[in-house]
Every structure is written in C-alpha cells, then in structure tokens.
Image: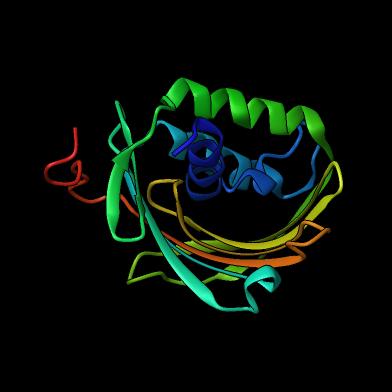
Length: 179
C-alpha cells in the first residue's frame, strides 16, 4: 500500500484534519484545537465508521492504533504499520492549518461519553474546497477528544462523507504480530 493511501487514512483517523483550523478561528475553537493537538501526542486506539456517496452510503469500519512511537492501520481485517510518524502527522496538521480558509466553533452542551464528562462543540471548517461540519466531544477531565461526528463535502466523485470516530486512550498496545 502506498504512503499516500496510508497518509490519507491516518490523517482521517488520527487528526480529523477538518478540525485542524487556523489560529484565527472564530468562536469557541480553542478547546477543540487544543484537544486535537493533544491527541496527536497521546497513545490512542481509534475506531471509525465511514460512509460516502461514492460507495452508495455503505458504511466501512476502520481502526488505527497510535502508540506514540508507531501508527498501525487496520484495513480489510489486516493490521499494517504506517510509514508515517507522529512528526509527519503534526506536519500534515500544520499544512491543513495553512490551507484553512475559515473555522468557527461554538459550545453546545455538556454530555457524558461512556460516563466521562465531556463538553460538546460544533465546528465548521473550510479547507480549500472541502467543507466540514463536526460535532466534537472533548473530555472535561483530560482535554482529549472522546468522539467526533463529521460530515464533509469533498466535492467531485466522492461527494459527501460521514465519519463517526471514537477515541480510546486506555491500555493502548500495538496489534499482535505486527512489526
């Protein structure tokens, strides 16, 4: 699998790049941006469900594990180590920030995720010609994202995409048997 495909998957899974946002983002974006930045450096097991118009709205499930020193992606039931590093992810986030035309956020409510108190935010972004609406649950205890629901209009053949992402930070280990 090419580095570009891995990069795309890792970026979607680990960064939710549409939330990368510029420093001049409007509204309550600081907690959302801080959570995404903190998440890059934190070992995380990510569970994602993706549905696109390109695939007739059919959902696909993907997983990623970021141990802090390595990134693993599960595709078609098989785990593979990504050639990308945490530093590469940070560079991709910074590049997305440079390309962001606008970002606005607003606090919606408090709502627990699996019993953990969280603040819920709505974020709208425009990165080049990709527009995104996201709902992000940020832990009030750790400041890390716990969950994201994201609708993105990528234009072209892909069209609309919906991502449901759940972040798990407990006992993150590399997948067995993958080097």
